[in-house]
Length: 134
Image (tube, rainbow, N blue to C red; front, top):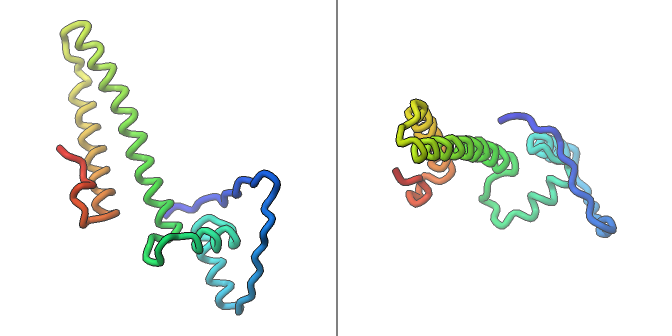
């Protein structure tokens, strides 16, 4: 998984008025620091986000960000191919001729949908409804 620059939390208007202090032993502190760094978060932000997860069995923050990035790549590719196919359709409707780039655009679409299916299968292999329909 790629390293991420640490992102600052957006400031809350009027500031954050509540403060949490806790003590721990050195080995625990080091483990938390490593996990926060791996998630690309400050230690306080990591503790807050970890504590606010709904269930203990959920993905780690790092895993969530990694999968979100993968899905973002697929979304970008689908937007690009959608624009290209729209342009090809406009030309075909106006001239009655198919663009020679149609085969390449459809190949790109197939490859992107395959990538999307692989990501969804990796996220939840037990849910066939999440797979794109051919």
